[in-house]
Image (cartoon, rainbow, N blue to C red):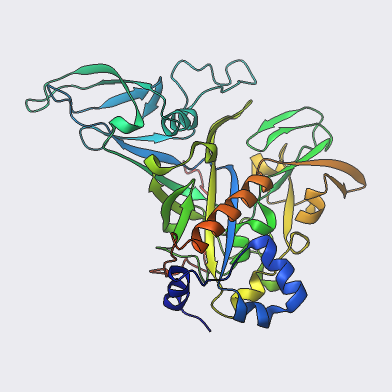
Length: 393
């Protein structure tokens, strides 16, 4: 048994033994769980991919004369202004008012909130347009200016749902192409799309949320962030396989961090033809090897993780609950899966390469003594379902 304080003392003194999630699995295969629990202090996990439930709170500072902003746009993308005078929240999936969206299907969604966030992190200038109904203490009614991230007082990324523990694998059983948030799906199960960092993914390495909880420190696109809550749609009461690994959606994390300290290569606006705009993020989470149970969970490999295959032509949009079957991530990462009598090409929206890069960066920061761990203030719920929206007349 180890404690957070003991591990942090070793990190601070440069004596901590740190492995990436990929290295830990090899170590356990060679030496076993007991030795791994004793010898390894921290394991780095990570993911990189689209995370639609993301956005930033921005504070612009006060103009002269002052304005109480009621509506504003950044490079034509509306930000929510129903808060204090010069604060706003820019969501990753918001698109410009002038965007034709899907009026001429499929829309291209070439620019949105995620792209504005990427521009800010890169240090680029964006246009701010705002107006107000005017008040006695905030007399200004409109403004138009150019602004950078450095000009702002605060820019705080606040993401309601990141790091899905597991997720659907999408196929298309219809005879026409589909345009979805998992990319283009070819007719008659012509391809299979998924989005996961697989065996590197944080919550798949801590399936029962024993070390990742409210208050846990995270590496959020290069900044020090933390988990501030369970994520929306957190649903841990789910089908699980051996070693407690969820075989469907399960848990999520709500994350926050300082946008000004993020690295542009890990904050990327993205577009999905026929669906919308989003933001791809890199997230790294260190897992302290507190005991043998934690080490055992860190042994999980792609072949141990099952994901449900869902038909996005009918079952997903109509919420039928039907599942075509399951495949594991070793099969998915091979590039081709034998499924329902067909050989189906697979592809991922999540980058395993970038996730592994984050694991290595975080490993180096911990070994340097610059990234300490934090014990959770509260555990994430381990028994909780998810309610549907029932339309009432």
